[in-house]
Length: 475
Image (cartoon, rainbow, N blue to C red; front, side):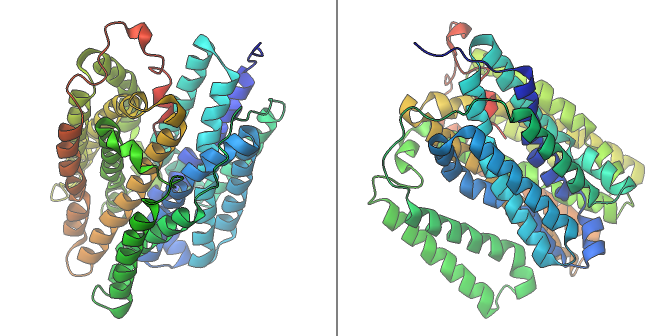
């Protein structure tokens, strides 16, 4: 007889706080670039690496962390993640140079990789029925709300207390989360695969992604034709080819390529990577309004209020659109809408008041698109995969969002950094923001190619067991 599940509101609060240590606090770095650059006297390229590495390491390790949580326990891995978060914050607080800052950001990425899959699993194992749906909804709103409020809350703290205090607050939240979760029961998978972890594939994948990220973020500083940059490009190419050649012969692949034989899943994962790349270009807009328009971090955060509200509202709207018209149409519409919204912030030729109004409206429109995309995309990814592979599939899907955001930041800020070296900051920002179109075009084409028009439509909405659950994987 299955034991009664005993999840509580206290547990929900503890889990939400754990999620916030990443989405609200760790990601606040995207809005305080000028303050950190001035305080630590580091180059923009180096700072871009520090910012993107957190999402990069989260994306790289989240698939492995999900499997580890099944074996050693979800509560235990959540605690490991919270400890990593505290260590990362301490390193950032005491940093006086780029090296310690970068190390702290890497540790924060590892923290997110541990917390995200393990807290989702804790919710699933501790709640059932309507209580489970409610808990998953709070998890999702905590994630999206925290990410959306990053610019506002982080900007306010940075402006009125100093940017290091962001990470002091994060430590306090992590400790409170640990206290609230201390009495909950441990959760492990009943049956765990006995296959050995694919360390070779994992190492090759990590090295490939790091090489590509280094090329994008530091190519300008190294020189695009320098021996170092050319060597990194060659290394990345060789590593990528080696990864595919080695992995295709294995049965226990780090990334299960057989999942991508399902076209709808492939479309959801690839478009998720690209959609997060679109969203990440907002970092250039945030930097521009501070450097060129004289905004504080807090004032920049105020521009995103409409974005936060729009994202949260549209998560449920996207769910209804999925049920009524399938996944394809809302996903196509969402990518188009979010691209239009972000692109509006590229109108740097406008005078101050007009530009600020356009930016506010642009952020709001982008939020409509991003929120609309969430549930149709995630539902498509999970529904089309066999039950015994849903955990792995959702981990890869989550990895794609983190890597997409990381590379979106890296590419857009790299373009901005190159152009600002020989042109005005207004032109550099405009072009850096419009990089989002390079992510949007393939996203639209791939969604249109891989996802059927009726994907996700059901006659009886009660038969969708994951309508509330699926949003928990997003972000």
